[in-house]
Picture (cartoon, rainbow, N blue to C red):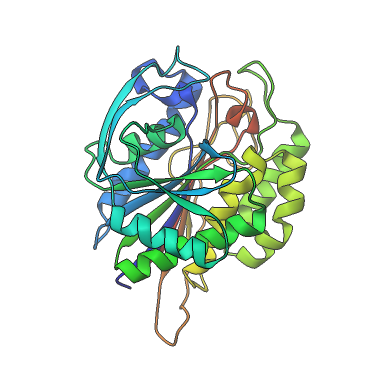
Length: 328
């Protein structure tokens, strides 16, 4: 495989995670999971040419956007939590060739997509937080794509495929990241966790992904994300699922980066939620691929507890992951 998506990951982005030396104890496993994921990515051979990250905090009402800037440089401010991220400098390369190819693929689907060439555009924290942990030296070019409020889940799924096709056409080896939580019922209070029913639904859905049951997961996704109150209606996870499907892998391998928080008690099962203590977990499925040739794909998923500026949004979701599907 020379071009296209080779890994799909879901990563955390809560403002409380922005700076490790200022993060609360319950956020450290999340941060360490992202750092471990980044270290694993740097061991890839060949290495990724590009990170494409879809963020729940880069919001576009009607249009998909293709960021065509040669470089992304500025200061990230978390608008909802400037006390936590009040101006974090960043400087990463862009990839206008890929961005325009992605725009063409989205337009070919019949969906509106515009070029964003503004020199004043600045990253949202949903982009900056995970990227600066995964690639702290800014060695990999980055393209951020928005949550489009007018897009339904099916459209988002198809855009995931469009991203893959743009990578194939441009010969770019892509790490695709969804910066999103799973369950996301907003409440005030960083100590408040999701209901047991939503935690259980989260657990069951995540296990479908880890077990490689993408078709079953997608069939159940609309009902699941409505029940758990998915972040941005589940749109960014839907792009993630479309991207994973587009790789064409028949088997996927699950792996956890970091740890998963447990509520005031320890357990060896990462499906439980709560507190600070956690236990590592790993699940692996291997197999051949499509197209008459051997292919190996890995779905690597690192779960740990989410948190937002109030430890309520992604945090009360209780589910954050670094998941990736890698094709070699």
